[in-house]
Amino acid sequence: METALALCRFAHFAAAMTLFGATAFVVALTPPDLAHALRPATRAIAAAAIPAAALSAVVWLALESASMVGDWSAFFDLGSISAVLTDTDFGAVWLWRLVLAAALVVALALGRGGPTLALLLGAALLLASLGLVDHAAMQAGAVGVLHRANDATHLLATAAWLGGLPMFALCLKAYCDPNLSAGAVTAMRRFSFWGQFDVAIVVLTGVANVALTSGLGALAPATPYRLLLAAKLVLVATMIALALFNRYVLSPRLAPDGAARRALTRSCVAEVVLGAAVVALVSLFGLLDPR
Image 1: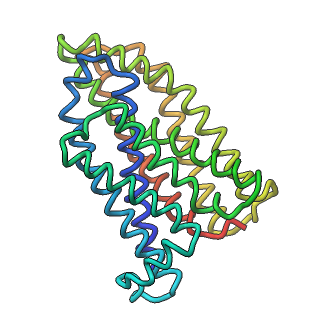
Image 2: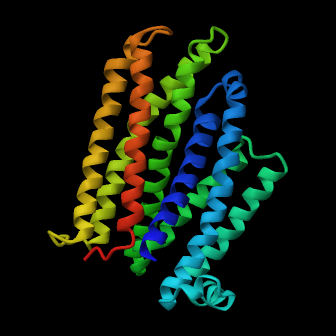
């Protein structure tokens, strides 16, 4: 049951983060001509991410019901699922998240799943509201509010980084088109510039999350949670090293048919793979006792 829940969490995190990151890239960083050219790709991302986020939210709820009861029969029992929605703090948050996910599905069905400010807001709320559950929900009072806000900020900043990488790779492809080259350069420069601050926010909020999860004290040295957290930190450090190499070594050498563009593309793919591994670890150790 725990394995199924971890896989479901991974699917939901990945879909919500991809939707927000890709939409934020196009809405906030991309010139209009390039945004129009990228529209088929961004609509395809929305067409995959929105249903995946909605379906995984429903499955996550059913799995939580089965986990709380301790029996797989509760996965299909509407009474048990309803009790989770109405009688638990998780359910109160999840009810609103299901409504929001349904609204995004309706918008997609009506042909309004393109990269708009409204979609960006919906994606941001769907993702940030995950900060109201998991370890952040275990604390009350001012510390609990701080932990939830910090967790939401960490999720949004991480998604802006990871979800923006596929769009950056598409910009590298558009860079070879003389009609789109100028717009692609502008979008990539903006992503690189603001990405420095975004990564800093990821690091700072990540450190704060560890401190808040441990109750501002030291984590136990050899628990599964601690080991998975350490693995995550190694992966994130590797991603930051790659990002710095891209920003200060490869980007200045960029040319439409040069080796730097191909190396940047491969580096983006590597960062996406490492990011997926980070999300997988978070999906797993979010289920563990951090103490």
